[in-house]
Each structure stands twice: as C-alpha cells, then as structure tokens.
Image (cartoon, rainbow, N blue to C red; front, side):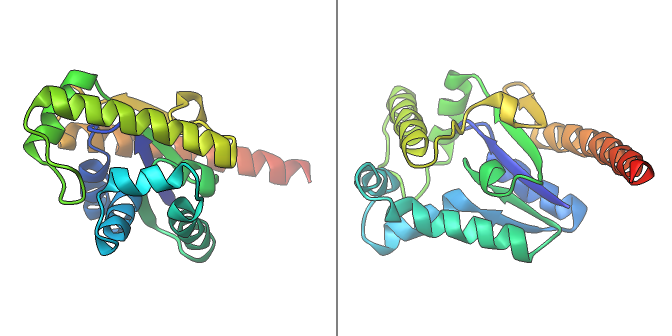
Length: 193
C-alpha cells in the first residue's frame, strides 16, 4: 500500500504525512524536503530553484525520477509531493485543501530554511500564491498535468479547521473503505476471467 499526499501549500501535507506514516508504521518521503535540500545545496532558496525550473527541467526531473523509481521498487510508504499522485498512479491519493489565509498563518509560524524569510503573513501569502501558480504552470508544461486538480485524487480534505490528528483519522477511515472497494473490484474481475 502506497499513499500519496498532495495539496495546497500550508494545508499540512508534510505534518499529516509524517503522522500518518507513524500511525501506519510506513516509511515517509517528502518531495518538498528533497527539493528544498537540492536548493540549499546549491546555495539558493526553493523559489530561486523554481525560477531556474521555468527553463530547465533538471530542477524537477531528479525528484520526479526518484518518485517513479520508488513507486516501482518499494511498498508500504507515504510520500508527500505535488506530483506524487501522478508518478505513482496506483497509490491511494489524498489531496489536502486549506483556506489561503489560514495557510499563510501556518507557514508564517514555521518558515522553512530553504525559503526566503517573510516578515508578514501578507508576504507569506504572496510568496505562496506565486509559487503555487508557477509550479502549476511548470508541471502543465513539462508533464501536461495539473497538480491541484482535485478530481485526480481519491480523497479531498479541507484542513482549515482540523487538527493533524483529525485529518489522519479521516484518511485512515477512508483508506479502509477504498481498500475494501478495490478488493471487491479485483474479486469481480477474477470471477469474470
């Protein structure tokens, strides 16, 4: 079982995926952390790396190839990333949504070392909106996919007024239902063959 967690910035993707991996005893991978590390190793912010990515696909390719390989070679893990659902299509796909203002407040409180520090919540909101729009455009250009298309996911949760534990509980409940439905589908296919 592989669970991919995508969604909007500030929706709690990394926090939820980490707690979910702990609850299920699965390994955890964060593509956002991996890209952030790539940026810092090159002495730049994530947004500077993304700026290069507008013209050069290598800024995404390394992480994207890692996801594809991981999906083929491992099982029982949680992966958080905007394109994880796309590169690991047979996963249980979770999309986390959030009110933009609530997201900005969350991000402001826990600014990442690979981001340009923001002095106000309004600054965070502006930075995040720009990053999401540019990433969405880049992924459409390189892969023809919209990372924020909720219809691509098995489960959509708005996290604005939920705790991390509440979100994880919802995912686990829905995962059980999803697994049960998939098991029934497989059994029906086996009977037909």
